Length: 346
Image 1: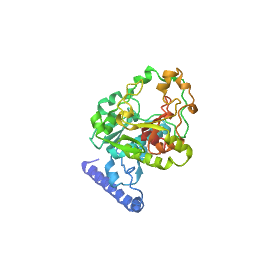
Image 2: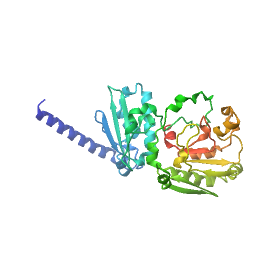
Image 3: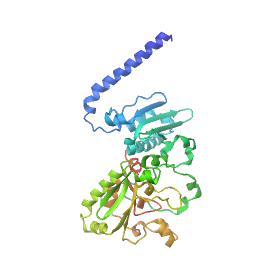
Image 4: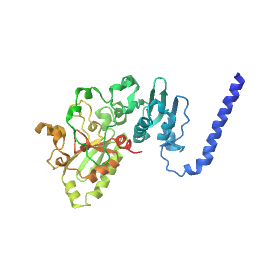
């Protein structure tokens, strides 16, 4: 093929792409603009191995032809994952992370390498242009990406069908488990790294006689405010619920500390979690119980401190996970982890 022929082919290809855009605008324009202007609808024309998505442009002026899940599905070849099921589950997880924090990303890069069987999504934070590799949910900055196998995902197993996770014999709590760590740079950039930078992002919520701060670095604060607005209506709906709400002794959130037996920062450190402590004296927290009962995991769910299902449902509807569903149960604990709940929705 001569240079002139190559030039003609390139021009023809460009013209075809422009034509496609006009067709999309004409055919889908009237339908698209009537949809809600949510940033999940995007248009991606991938190259061979790389593509980029300008997230903020879709928030302000979305081109609504593909969902994020659809864009990922069309870009990444199934053979990279081995099976279509593995690909679907991976896409669910990427999409959940995107949906949870989409207003805080400016760009997203999609990459894969078939010979090496490598693939990844890179999220760029809007506030500081820092890049985070999805890395199967670990959200790793560039400087530690080459050690990605040493880190656990930000999301975790969480049942959403209303059942409580049954605690197994704690053989899973081994040195091997703790050898893997979570990299908190993503949270540090969103919520603050020091007590001062975290404090600067805190706003207080008032509920009856209780006042507690939540972090405004993401939608956490607004989500918590919505939860307690619903509680104002719920608390007087039945005598049983009124008794439970009246039994609340404290609501605490911001408390820089580590998770028991791990050395990892608690979500209370960032003030994206709260503990609702009531007058129920039954087992509440596995670590406290372990001081009084050696086999703390043998306490059945019905014998632990009670949290009304209606309260749990409202929290979950706004992106908060309940510690009562964990194997190491924490009945009073609710933390803002929308990526956990969104990955269950397809």
